[in-house]
Image (cartoon, rainbow, N blue to C red):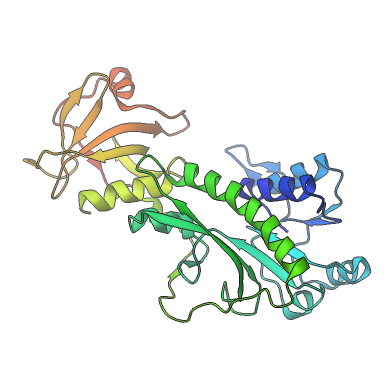
Length: 308
């Protein structure tokens, strides 16, 4: 069971290591883009490439899906970024239960936005956890964990890719443990448990009243997609890459005080200034901020405003 791009390495690795799924369950096709074109989940496209049967129920726990699963009688169900809750009937169905790949070092960052959170909190290390699914969210006993370092150049998209590839390898390790170990599970710690919430639209709006470190961390946590939104000349603009400048602010937050050729646009913050290196105008591709300046003839003294 999986839905977005993050799930594809797991599916491919299972197939390539002799664990080809007999069924793939994913979310229904959804309208996407400005034209709202009906689009299949990434996992559906990948599964069809491997000639794996795909179903897309509105509710994975509905009677029709349960009957199909009972008929298949799976040894194990694996979920990777599926986006649906499994009720007890499904959880108890497979011999080896249902296991999930979660991109954090549980019990840290239980919930739906663990990769974003490591940037918000300026963490230096994260990882993947394979655990058995229970009724409580992301609280089941652990089969396998691995650590991944977060580099200074990482951002949400790059780290997601790293964790999806690492998690796929971890799944194979977990399946081999389940095959050979009579007691493969280790209970999760009940201390240092942290939760992360679903990302909402308002979370994607930049506030220039934040401290410079907060702004840069949130830019990293949303880059390249979905992107943190600011406003320039009353139009939305996503900031994709920025760093903290050594200079202190001498003007109001959001004030553009310097533009450096092939370097970027310097903006005043609250405590420190910020160098914007890459951005993305609405409906356009990601570009260097100096190139954006050349196309829009930005003047010193203009402002980036809060997102809306």
